[in-house]
Image (cartoon, rainbow, N blue to C red; front, side, top):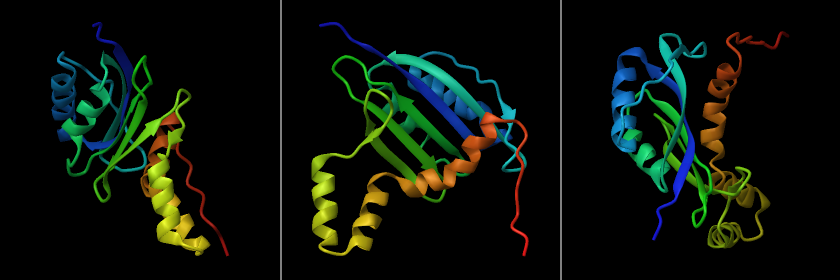
Length: 167
């Protein structure tokens, strides 16, 4: 039986500078090899750093990476694992306030909500459309997306422009 390799990305959205070498050590231990990240300042949160690391490893390495980093105070991250033969993809999101969220992903990175989760949402909501909306947002990890969104955009452009409503 041949073991299939997987690949993905670890996005460290924000981490205190003092935590950075520990994140590299934990990721290296999870991937069973030494790793070094290119750290940049995170303009959204003063004094924090951000990094992106493209990884390859055995199937399931995304889960191992997420488990190695989950629960760390002051750390915001995402791990993706692309689908590979015989294995679905996955996405893990973590924030200090919300903890960890996992979702299965399809071949283009869309989250896949399992049938049983959808049935549960419909059962809990009954005929209440607002409750169904709340349950679906929970199933999609919307709270994690909302918290991480400004950190994601900051990594796309080194200059962050904050617009404020006037009046």
